[in-house]
Amino acid sequence: MSDFRTAARATADLVADYLDAVPDRPVWQPMDPAEREALLAAPLPELGTALPELVETIEQRIMPAPMGNGHPRFFGWVNSAPAPAGVLATLAAAAMNPSSAGGDHADVHLERAVVRWIAELVGFPHPAGGGILTSGTSMATILCLTAARNRAAARLGHDLRADGLTGLPPLIAYATAETHSCVRKAVELLGLGSRHLRTVPSDADGRLDTAALATAVAEDRAAGLVPFLVVASAGTVGTGAVDAFHPIADLCEAEGLWLHVDGAYGAFGVLDPAIAGQYAGMDRADSLALDPHKWLGVPVDCGCALVRETEALRGAFSLVPSYLRDEAAGELGWFSEYGMEQTRPFRSLKVWATIAHRGRAGIAADIARCTELARHLGELVEADPELELLAPVRTSIVAFRYRPAGASPEATDELNRELPVAVQRRGNVFVTGALLDGREMLRACLLNAATTEADLKLLVDEVRLAAAGLTRHRAES
Image 1 (tube, one colour):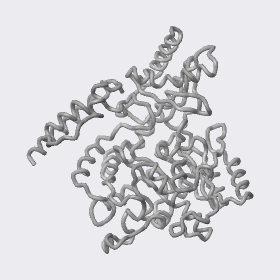
Image 2 (cartoon, rainbow, N blue to C red):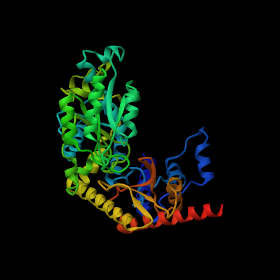
Image 3 (cartoon, rainbow, N blue to C red):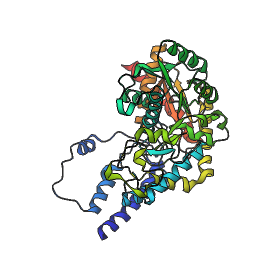
Image 4 (tube, helix red, strand yellow):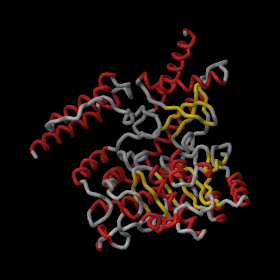
């Protein structure tokens, strides 16, 4: 163990030095082609390597080429900086290396606690056993939609677990075009078919149009189809818009539909008093999927599925073979009865450490800081004649674009399509792009409370400089 102790201390210093240096290095740079090839073509070693030498290789070959998401000027996708407490806890969890499927050991009970903490943070009702940690919201969505599908089948007198989809009439789900792609993947994986996922229009604020939803449900019922699910968003992908939950929940209750809320990134916004009113009614959902590894900064991977009724998950997944019988499991049984995973990693320790380190007040302050920064960035965009704000800033996502004077819509789209990579390659800030209503845009997501107003000013400047460079290149070619 002396070899391990020496290497572990070196690793701790390496990680601490790395985190300290992140703000002073480029946000992201393309890998050196030779280094990239060395990783891709690395031969399977015949003989082992000493631990200190492995740490040295990590320092020299791996850590100089990060994704960039730990940097305060990283505004891409929805990837957060890792919470230091979560980084430390990850090492301890790996050292214990349990399977958090079930049994009487610390990780199992800690997961029950942190799932309850997450529910309390976002104000979602939490019956005992009414949630489980997952790899991310993509998996959490699959679990929640499985529960919704099985309930719909049972109401039709169909035992889906025994008989499969054969003989089941088409089940129809509803979501807006801004709903995350994991919802469509889940619908396809569950055998429901993407043609049965109806796209509901959004209103002028980018929120699900409840009147259009009601019309779609009525039309499908009249056609002999079976509406069963509505997916609402607590922070849409493109603009961070939060759907109006109360009218959606009223419709779902009246029509007997399962209401699922995709809160992957945005659900934790409810902790900011300045925007908390947008989330009224989120607690009326049948299920909520969200990611502690996004706005909370828990190191990847960690998602969470929350359900209003414990039996919704357990009834969909519970299968206890004889070799897993455990009299000590208690009334709630094993976590493996609530999802797909049997061997499950010890995710709860890094969640516990992250939340315990900051506390509710600290987490709320960090989230409020991010939304404040997003609103400030929106103001900078609106004040710049070369930029265009494409949607109101609702949470901490800012949707905007570069607007060259006199350019055609096609030329403007082409420029904005190329602009994110041009900005990224400069190394000073990192922003990504997307489509909104068919138009190319830049999409800045603010998740790092260490970001400053000066960083936002630099983002605006870098977008303008990169756009000028692309324009010059086109003129010269």
